[in-house]
Amino acid sequence: MRNSKRLAEIRKLPCVRCGNPNSQAAHSNSAKHGKGRSIKASDEFTIPLCAICHAAFDRFELGSRAESEAMFEKWLIKTELMMRRNEDVF
Image 1 (cartoon, rainbow, N blue to C red):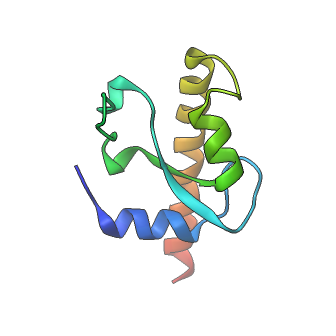
Image 2 (image 1 turned 120 degrees about the vertical axis):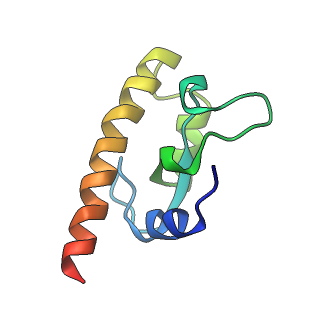
């Protein structure tokens, strides 16, 4: 499922890992979120990561696949909290 509004909001947030204000919308690498060969996960499973953290995450340099999936779940919760805080500001 694609959601351009969500992706735009994600890109406004700082990197969920290092805090860099220049972030990208990073999709989950997990099949449970719809990821498959040449198929991105649903936009509902995106988090803000800077280019460096995004590349390291996609190459599994931050941990094994299982560790990466666990990290992503925590970051997804943090992202949702950050997005709610932004809504409260406006």
